[in-house]
Amino acid sequence: MLLTEAWDLHGVDLEHAPVGFGSHHWVATDPTGVRRFVTVDQVGDGRFERLLQALLAARTLHEDVGLGWVVGPLPATDGSVLKPLGRGYATAVYPYVDAQPFPDNASPRDRGLVIDLVAALHAATPVVRRFLATADLQLAGRAHLERALLRLHESWTGGPFGEPARALLAARADHVRVLLREHDRLADVVRRAGSDWVVTHGEVKPDNVMVTAAGLVLVDWDTALLAPAGRDLWQVVSDDGRELARYADLAGREVTTAELAFYRLDWQLADIAEYVRWLGGPHLRTADTEIAWNALVANLDVSTKRAR
Image (cartoon, rainbow, N blue to C red; front, side, top):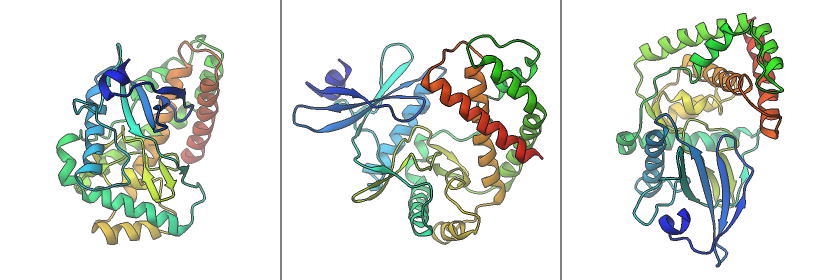
């Protein structure tokens, strides 16, 4: 068993943890009652190296920089933080965190605490820069979404949500094309801005900002990249500008509205692209595809409102 051979974990009891989306998770409890969090990710198309870079950065942030709120991976007995598992998968092991998700309706004070974490993370860029890939500002899944827009006259018969997804995208197709052009425009604006790019977590949202008895922690570091600071801020800031001002005071840099708008739109379109890919191909009706369908509806409704 990989956990025994690589992490020297003997006699663990594995319990599936139905949390998150896109990875597989288990809680591993050893005979003494100590729990650890085990993840298995698909790592095809060169993703193993990208994931390894991100986890090495998280480990360094926790151990060498001293950011104890970074929940990074536990090293295997040979020092590795990521191990191949069969063909196309990889495993990592983390400390188990007894926590609750950050509230969606957080107070300004609590949002300020998240800003403090983000500013401290960005300040550590010189230490972990060597590990990380650099964001290319390209939309993930764009090629598939554009192909889907060309296939709207065909039937999507790969599963129960295929035809509903095709009809929904067809009704919103012009709006999605407008948003793709806006994505290109904003990406050019961000590239030309010439601001210093920093180490970013990439998904600073309530599911990943966890509230423990000792304070806030940040989990799920697999999307870490060097990128504009706005990548970590757009999900945290409110309309009154209070959080942006706090960040500017702490970090000594301003974050442009273009950065925030770009990453908000990038997230939206990446979700649309992924759900269209999934529901436009072979699939069954499962709890996950129900979530994907509902998310596609929500994202395309928002896209339509923004394009008007």
